[in-house]
Length: 133
Image 1 (cartoon, rainbow, N blue to C red):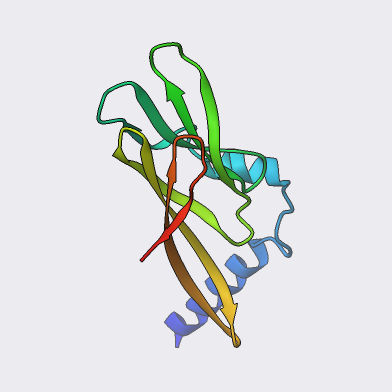
Image 2: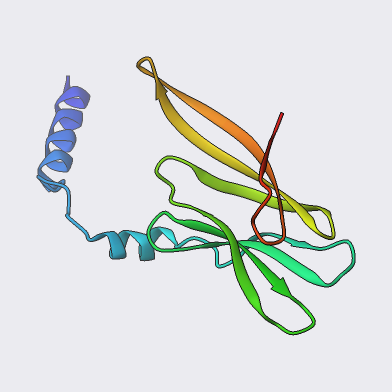
């Protein structure tokens, strides 16, 4: 009986010490606490060694595929996703003049949240896009 009473008193003391409400923090504070998105992901070099392709975060949930010419250092955004709901999850070279990007989204389909993945091929200007599969 003494053990039950001690346990009950300890539990009551711990519950009284716990905060009554959750602390409110800003989105910036949460990002600093849990880490921001990586500056570059899915980094690939072209088969001819002249270009670098990578994903980088944009404003908010946006992600952009950036192509950098290694000879002159110039970069350009080939394609971007807004993250609502689609998101670029990876890009790679299939040839020196063509890339394939994977697009990921979670969509509401008849009341069910379903993950969807699509692959899109495009040239190095972001044009001539073709859905694969």
